[in-house]
Amino acid sequence: MPTYRILASGPFPWSKDPKAPIYDYGSKVENVPISWLLKLPGNDQRLSIDEMADLQKRLVAEGLRDPVIIVVGKKSRTAKLGEGNHRLKIAHRLGYTSLAARVIVGSEYGSEKHNAATIGPDLIPEPNKYFPSDAAPSDVFKSLAGLSV
Image (tube, rainbow, N blue to C red; front, side):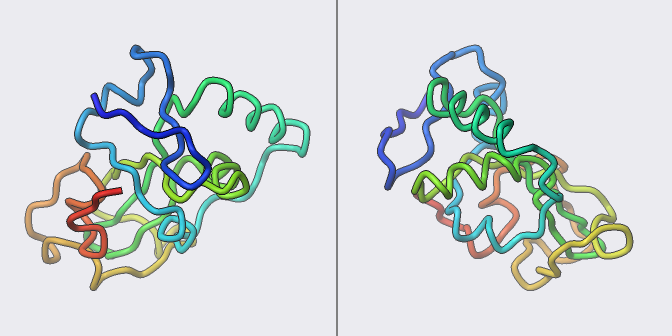
């Protein structure tokens, strides 16, 4: 299990609880630069200011229990931040530079139904070739290959 620095300039701290769901994904979870994650469209903010403040207090006290999820359409070649929009905003506000993320791949996702970023050239492998349905970000995006955050 990796150890992460708890500094504002480093990765956002993972949960201190070794039984937290974030550890169940093993090597499929990687710290991805927040600047990269912010380029992806996400869901609308649904939490009030007070709820965001409570979530921030909980994240600072307990660490991140679940990774953010990047959803990718292998046919549409699009991606979206499917879960974790609020956690991303809080980590960014606190000055962290990366956040734990994993990828879920479907055959179609994004442009036909949702606001999604067209990222075809950044995706690996080629269209309609094998694509893991649950993967580490660096296994799916060329720009994150060799990730060592």
